[in-house]
Length: 395
Image (cartoon, rainbow, N blue to C red; front, side, top):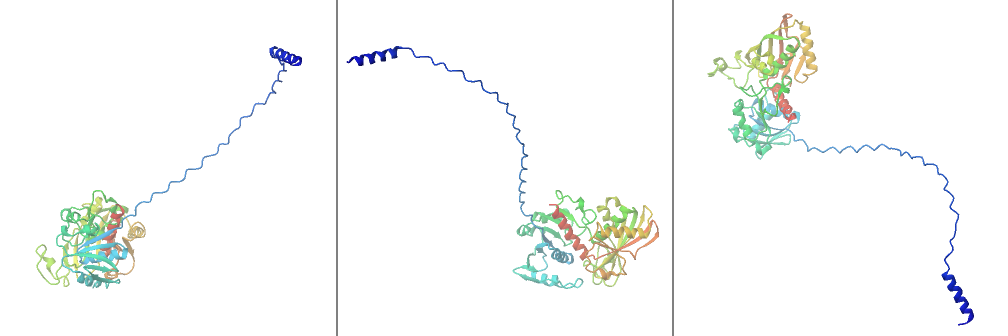
């Protein structure tokens, strides 16, 4: 090793053995005071409104379908009224009329004229305006297969089944509800424009549309009683002959006079129409009764209501009250006329009651005679269909 190497080595050793020098650095300057940051106010934006829920699509409401039991005067005119109002009739039952004869009877009518639509039959069905209607010929209502045609509302138009027990056979056979085209001894009774709001779909499967005369009298009595009050009254209906009467003298065990020739006589007869008003307007129960005269005309009848009023009223005030009802809440049910009309002017009129303002009279301001016309066939048949529609609307 050379001397130079020894010196370098010694220097290196000394350097390695010497403690390192402490480096003194000046302290860092204190941090400049920073202004406190102002709190940032976040802008609160209103939440967007939640999207409106998409309405649930309800299943389409089933349409009203109708079956008719009995293809007599009322049965056929109910079918006409259904066709005019766009109500679908799915079946007709009549044990005495086959489809071919139904075509003839429906198409030609001595009172209401020829049916203006198309009528035919095919494969045991009645075809009206290209609408197929099943035809059954069952004598027992329990045998009519209403289930096969969609459980229709049934119009009981035979005149033979009037009680709840008798007409319940239709329900057993598949009818959804039943409307009896006559007064019933025990079924709830409804007159359109008078008491239909008391119909209870939960408990009433079988109802009565009352009689044609009650449908004429009750709307008029309702207007007069609500406005002036009826203390008591007597009703007479001058009524066209019907199919139950005799064309010539024949036997009639129940009422002998009813057996006399309908075309030859004015026949006094009983009627429960006035008393039935008490069933649809309870406040008039026991205050009205009446009778009928059967006369030799084929259609259109007239009611004469003679009553005592609770409040005095001039005849002109009575006319105004009836006119207001006819143009208002009872439109389509009650009509008003001051024309010089006679019975044939109302053949084919669909109203229940047409008040004849010029025919009525007043003895004084509390004792009046009021007159109202009605087509006892066609007007009544239209109310049957209206009651069906009302009941269906309450399902």
